[in-house]
Length: 117
Length: 108
Image (cartoon, rainbow over all chains, first blue to last red; front, side, top):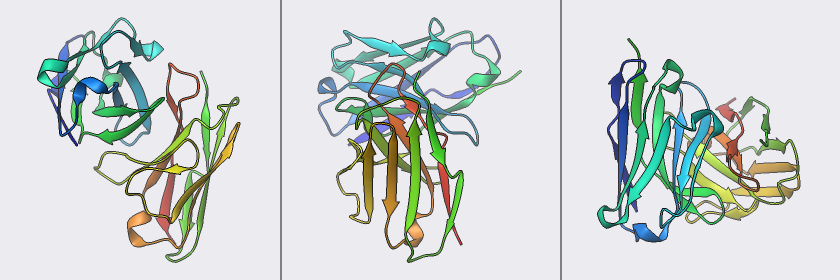
């Protein structure tokens, strides 16, 4: 099992960014997927989750309306579209495979998003 | 939102000794708690789910216990590779999935 994120970088406040995560080594279409972020020197913060078929998406309340999670099972890929970015969105963003009710059993290495002018 | 409170924030333990980390939920979460280990610059690693079930490949030195609102992660006979930050997470009532702020386990 391997998860590889990409798409992070430096973006100005108010800007947009799209993160991607490609999955390898398992049947991607069978698993719920999560995005979790970690601000520098801080703890883990759940961002969003999407069901295996994309029938259900959930978001942290503070991010609703600005972030959109999606997936393309044909491409074994997970996405996070982020808009109206703020300095407090600066973090490493991890994609993670959902296991059972709400845990994450495999994680990518993360991609750093820096929001700064 | 369920708040997860971990204690202590930092725990200093000597190699070979036992470490006990605590996590308290602001309301009952049944046994829907997971524990993760994170080393600097690395992704978190799932250790325990269902409060007491070890994830695949996790050493038997790690054990979890508790139910309701009080949970414990115990690491017996600490080895050098165990010094890291540990996070608890509840998934009983979500969204949102919530994490504790972490306990840093350091070498005494």
